[in-house]
Length: 135
Image 1 (cartoon, rainbow, N blue to C red):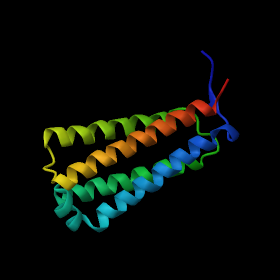
Image 2 (cartoon, one colour):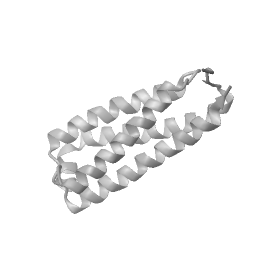
Image 3 (cartoon, rainbow, N blue to C red):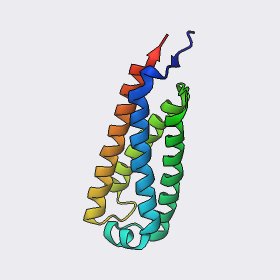
Image 4 (cartoon, one colour):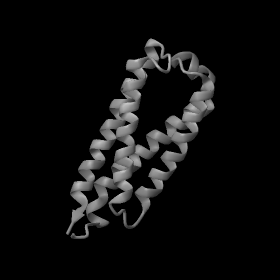
């Protein structure tokens, strides 16, 4: 088995994709925490649930942001972010399709738009990881 590392010069695109993900995710988390009541009225899910999601997104955003600043990104961190982004995307779509979160029409559109955005971040991160690989 050959060890694969990610070098700093070749990881610029990956770092940018991770950093953008961190900013958008953290900002979304802050909005859910700060405006849970009005957001719940607009989107449908309970304000308490949105606060919990907001706290998770804020912590996740900070963690992804910290990963983006590491000198050696390695493979495990970016791959974990990509996997979690895929899970979020599928979970968001499943919540809309099943009606599990009682989304309003605006909420369903928001959840789908968010899923597409998160999937795009995952794809950019995959591209960045491929560009950053060296033997």
